[in-house]
Image 1 (cartoon, rainbow, N blue to C red):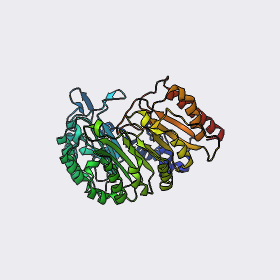
Image 2: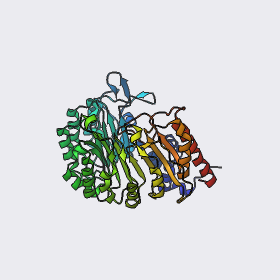
Image 3: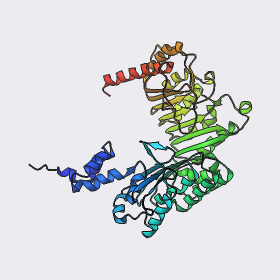
Image 4: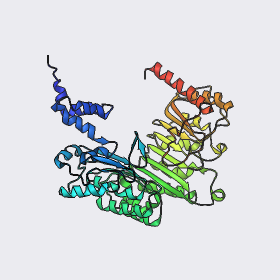
Length: 470
């Protein structure tokens, strides 16, 4: 008896939803061989989100690896049948390239510097048609000057999101060349731009500012603050929903000025992430021991805020009144991170009792909280319950140190306030844009006191979830 495919699984919209649930691209590739009805929809799933550019390059022609150059076309200029090529490349919506990770899955990931020119020559021979006519998202990370402009063949007017990361060896000259090229080829309708150059100087800031000013619809922006002139924020601000900036601080009052500017120019902002570094060389003489949260008070007027992360090299001090203000101002707040990755002495951290204040004045949507706390004085667990136990996906303590004598008291204290899926603590200081206080930075040693706290608190949460059937 011949197997019959149910009629519902011959409808492309239903098939698309089903294939999106497949955990691996290989599963979708297998589905493409089942029948002709499935082939087109399954191939869309296979090609829509490419983890690297190599599947595209292999369509253009066979590749060979040369130690001194990287991957290149074996027969020189690509000569692929464009019709066959377009049948696949038209399905691509997202593509990534990262030559900073030299080894991934056992294969070198660097492509030859000649590849870009060869692809552009091939495209020109096809009447200038786009290589990726439907691409929406590109993530591109390069380590050296010669790789910066390798992105050119993959850009297209349909682009919605561009994430560029330039390594520390990329020069200012190459950075400027990249920015000038992007200004001429990126669509004005771009919605998401991430561009953090490896260095900052006046010429790069001016060129990046000029590039930003050509966009009409940016809603997500990640860039150095030095390139965000006030008039640029005035122009982009009405559409911005997410802003991530690296910010060099000379005096702490500048943080308040930035908060005021964002409040005045970004009325619908939902996510603010600030990586604040101290710009002066005389750190020991001028840097404050703590930064008061009151400098961020102007942001309390941003009533749509869902995420606030402030990464500073010194602790942020938080008063009980600040927590009450957060509770009232940001009912939709889901993520709050205040300088958890500080280099400072743990004695300068917030008192642990601030967690009791959060539990009382709880932002109803809060799911992830990271603070730099002083864990040398653990409060007694409350004996009378004035509010329900709060649920947290992640509680981060950053670089806070914990004495083994306080392990038991802090476990009791936390269990009285919260049910926490994951606790993150890293005894060694770390700071930077690429690390998160909500993800472990390296492995916590088995004998570290935080390990015992994590295991005990997370185990109670798992047990409660089993009882509740979640």
